[in-house]
Length: 298
Length: 301
Image 1 (cartoon, chains in turn orange, green):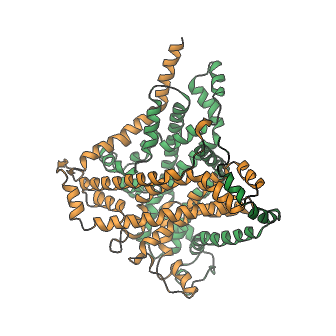
Image 2 (cartoon, rainbow over the protein chains, first blue to last red):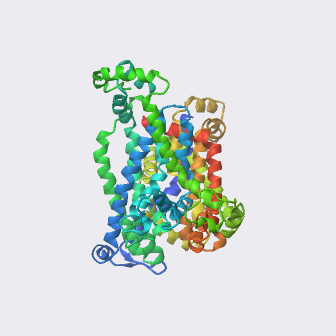
Image 3 (cartoon, rainbow over the protein chains, first blue to last red):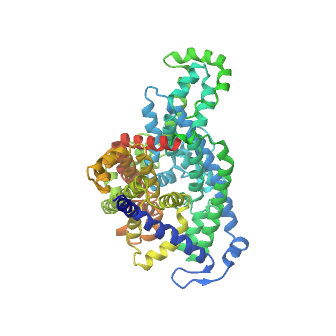
């Protein structure tokens, strides 16, 4: 009797998770494993892949003139966008955390830009950055400041893309905010009884308690930023002079515009390894700063 | 549970605390005023691009390029919304996007709830392994599989159809399953057991007992899934060629190239593209915040 029930639970368990087992095998495991092979081939997508060993990687690292500029652009982008949106998101969440009159309106306003679909937002910013009639330069002119080159300048194009990301910082902010709200109130009360200063409670209670979320957001942010694509595809097309040629955009271009599938997959693996190394380093160095409540509770 | 770990250092600052206590008792402290000022400046920055968009959408084409620019249009050009939406074949692309989004949302939410129930409530050999495989796959960049999958789908004759976008949605979404598992932890297993003693099957337990209790997290998933599908750009860009199958994201992205001078029409169309997301968010806001809150409450532990 007991054994029969147990077997039924086993069977049901597998039935319930069956969608993800299939999904994992077909959409994750198969493409990953097969791309390991494709990376070593010359393949146009419609012909038969021809094994060429590490020739793709050799060409990538030593010949391809677009590779190093795009690595540089990718790193700049990650190093600019991840810390800035993390810090801004956390700062906003802390400002919006305390219940003040009208604070709900502010929360909604800061979240509003993230509701705007990616392509709608990007096309809007394309017009904002337009040199002559765009909002950005109109404002600068009205304030009597020199105009910016924005997307058309080699040094300004990438920061301009980062600014768009900061406009949509609300998605990170909301996660920090709900993290802040779930910090147990008794901690603050205990600190207040002890007469702790405000900045002290922030430094010694708030920050340590949300480090798990901060850490998770950092990892997710890094992985996301390395894969940025839409901004480049819609706004700059990689230019000017490779300044915004993020690696993921180059991969897309090599695969679907130049039909060099094998080559593009080898680039995918380079990007993949970069992301893994970056994540591992982050994990290694920030994990010891993360404060975990004791696990006995479960 | 560990209580305050830093109490020693907190106590040393008792003196500063006494000083700031007086402020805290007042209705609005000086710091609160500073907070309002900072938030207001930021809020203007957040809203400005959107307000600009609205004014452009209501201007005539001549006014858009007037120097100096006028903030409030002389005459509201409501007809921009009609013309602008016609330019992107709005109703057709809107219908396409809606159809895809509804199917993707249903597929992702239903399959993720099923998987979440299996992982969260049933015990079977290999459960932990599968759980870590699913969650681990979240760390993989999505594009790793892009090209082999493209090859697979074109081989199946799915090129220039919506199938590469819709079908995968029915095979679980690891984030959502994880979210559901986390939420289930907040509901006592005794509810399941009581129902099972009354002869309920796993299916009944999930649909009749747990689903109503997990409404906030399900609504959160619905909003995220719909938003994700509405925003999707790379997959449609790769797979959909025929304009009559385009989604709104494709239509807007290509509209920007062909009619780059008709800013007012473009902004009007862009606003209409945003509108469904605004409605979705405002109607689901309450549940959404609750669902997100629970996600964090559990990830804190």
